[in-house]
Length: 435
Image (cartoon, rainbow, N blue to C red; front, side):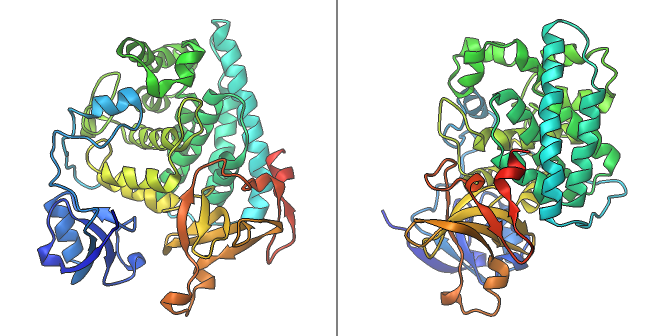
C-alpha cells in the first residue's frame, strides 16, 4: 500500500498520527529526527509551538498507542520484557552541573592517525584483562584506564574520528568490539552533554569493562543473544553481577562500578539486574545503557541482520521516556546524527557511500564519502561530498540528499578499499584502519 501525505493544521493533530514533514526546515526545530509518531499530548504541544501546519503520512498513521503494547520484537528476550512495561515516565530535564562546551580542535584527517593507535591499544588492554580474569586473578586496570584517557582526549578534540574507526575497523571478538563501540558512542554523547573530562573518563572506562562478565558465559549464548530461551536468558542476565564481582578489589572507582552495574537498567524499570527505574539509575549508567542498546541494534551478529543506524535512531526516538529518558535520547541523536558516522547510504541520484561526519545544524545533510556512481559501479577514487555545502542556495528539486540507509556489508561498499581525496592532502583509509 502506498503512502499518501495529507496537510493538516497542527491543532488537528492526534495521538497515533505520523508527522512526515513540517512547514519549516527540520533543522530550525528541536525535533532530532525527520518523521516521527505523535505519541502524547506533549508531542502535539511541541509541534504547535513551532509550526502552523504539517504533513502526515496517512498510510503510516497508527492507532492510538496502547500503553500495554510494545513495538515489534527487536531482540528476543529484551523485546518480550518490554511488552508489559510500556509505561511512560516523565522526569525533570537533565541538569549537568557546570557543563563544558567543547570545540573541535583538530581535523578528522589528523585525528584518525591517533585514533587508529588508540583502538589497537584498547583491544590489547581488554584482551589482557580477559586473560587475567580467566586465570581467576585480579586484573590490573591501569592499562585500560590509560587507554580510556586517550579515547576521551581524542573524542574531545574531534568526535568523528574515533567513531569512524570504531565503525569501520574489523574485530574478531564480539565482546571486545561491542565494548569498544559502546564506549565510543557513550563518549560522543557525554561530550554533547558537556560532561567534564573526569566524568568522561569514568564513563568510558565503565563501558569498556561493562561486558567483562560475559567472559564466563557460553560462546553460543553470546552468538545468539537475540534467540535465547527463558532459561538461557535468566543465565545471560547474570553477566552484569558477574562483571561487578570480577572487578571487586581492582581499585576502580565507585562511578565506574556504577556504570558496569547499571548499564542494563531501564528508565521504566524493565531492565536488570535490579529493575530500578528513573532517577535511581546513575546518569553515567543511563548514558552507557543507551549507547550499549544502540550498538546492540546496529552491531554485526551471527544470528540475525542488524538494523541500519537510521532505523535504530528512529526506534530510540520512539522509546523516549519508556526505556530511556527523553532529553538523553534527544542529546544522543543530536550527538551522533540522523545518519551516524559510518552509516552506509544511498543518495537520491543513486550514488552510494558512507557517512564521514555530520553537522548538528544540518542533520539531514552530512558529509558522505561516495564510493559508487549512480549505477552502483565502484569508483576508482572515492570522493567526499559535504551535502550541506553542496546544497547551499539550491532549489528543492536540485538538492542532493540521502534517500536511504543501507545495511552493513552492502556489496561494493568497503571503505577500507579506498583512498579519500579531499581539499586536503590524500590519506589512506586502509592504512589507518590497519594501524
